[in-house]
Every structure is written in structure tokens, then in C-alpha cells.
Length: 329
Image (cartoon, rainbow, N blue to C red):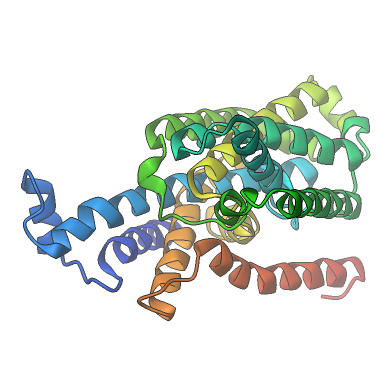
């Protein structure tokens, strides 16, 4: 039953992304667009050139951010952890902006690959500042480290914009996610990277579950905690950077999906990661569709929509953590 709910949400996200918008696209338009060598109607043209690349981008980015969120929350043992909230998204976006300004390359395909070093540096920095390298990481410390790093990156980019006006246009896209430019990105390459990151995460899932019991017990079970942590950081970086490269730094998606995946997929980390690969695209595509419909014919960027949804979720999770620690039911 729960698997059916996950699949239904996934299908609903795909259908809403393809069918709904200023230009309605029916099933016959979709079939005709696929069968015809060239689009025959405005609806077929919208489907092939706008909706289909947008949906593919949402599938890729949604799966990447959701699986990264599941891995990060398991690695940090913190239900408030999120690649966007802890600065990993901002690190990837900052790397893209700086590289674009320093090299002068502005094509989307080239820019898409520059987020990986920034994401890795941000992930390692947050984990180190949060005490992860010493094995004494604490949820509050990780949150503070991530928020501080996120603020530092955004402040540095703001100062850069003041000094260089040409940075504003690059900054506008890479600091507010959107699915609209997905057709210009190397989606096949990025999808392969996301699959590699997801495969590493699934292989490491049993070790991460053992690591959550403590470093001492993990060593007693024959695990090497630091090697597991390093592998998880690599998986996290690959997925987050690929997601940022495809759609920009979409915040809160890695916070919204993991609790839903735990509720629907059960306690096993592997099933949560697999569920996140379906639930992430569903949530992202539904949020993107809502953003296109609310103020049509204009649109609200999907990064703004996920922030609107994720803010209340973050407050609810924070209050739930406080209630649990105080011993209340």
C-alpha cells in the first residue's frame, strides 16, 4: 500500500509537469508530439521544447536532492540536516558563479560541471566544523556550522556583486533554482553522476546504519567509520552538485522528503534512499507546477516554492525535536 502511494505521487508529479500550465497539453498532444517528426500544433511544440526537458530536469534534480538529504540526515543523525540548509548547495552555486566570472564561460553546459568542487569543499568543511571527523558530531553544532557557512558564502557573493555588476546575471540563476533551463544542460551526464552517487549511498547504507549506533560499536562490527564517512560524503557531493548543476541550489527539498520517505518506506536506509528517488521528483515537480499556475502567465521559481513549503516543515521538525528531548509525548 505504501509503495502504491509513493508511485502514485511520482506519477502525479510527472503528469502535472507535462500537462498543466498556461498552455494545456492533453494526452493526445503528448502522443502526437512523440509520433510526429516535427511538432504539428502549439501544444505539441510546448510539450517537446518546454515541458519534456523541464520534467526531465525535475526528475534528475528531485532525485538528487532527496537522496542527498536522506544520506546527510543518516550521516549526521540530524533530522534537520539538508544539503541546502547546511550550505552544500550554496557552496556548489558559489563555485559555479566564481568560475563563470573568472573564466568568462557563460554557457550552461560548461557552468554545470563547476559545482562539484564547491559542493565537496562545503560538505567537508561543515562535517569538520560539526565534529564529524572526531566522531563527536552534535545536531546543534552541525546546524550552526552549516548556517554560518551558508551565510559566509552568501555574504561573499553579495560583496562580489557589488564589485562586479556582471556577476548579477549569473548570480540570479545560480542562487534561485529553476527547471526552465534544463534543456541546455548535459542531463545525460548529470543523470549518470546522480546514479553513481545513489549507488554508492545504497551500498554504504548498512554501514551508515551501524555508524548511527556509535563509532565504538561500528568498529566492533568490523567497520571503518572514517572510510564510511568519506564514502558518504562522496555520494552526497556527487548528488548535490549534479542537482545544483541541473536546476540550481533548490533549498529545503532534502529536508521535506526524508521524513516522508521514512514514514512511507520504513526504517531501512536503503528503502528510504530508493523512496527518496521517487518522492523527490514528485515533490519538486508538483512545487514547480504550482509555481507556474499561481501567478500565470508569470511564474514563481521552484526554489522559492520549495522554500515556502520547507520553512513550516523545518519549524515543525525543530519543535518535534525539542518536544522529544523534553520528554513530552
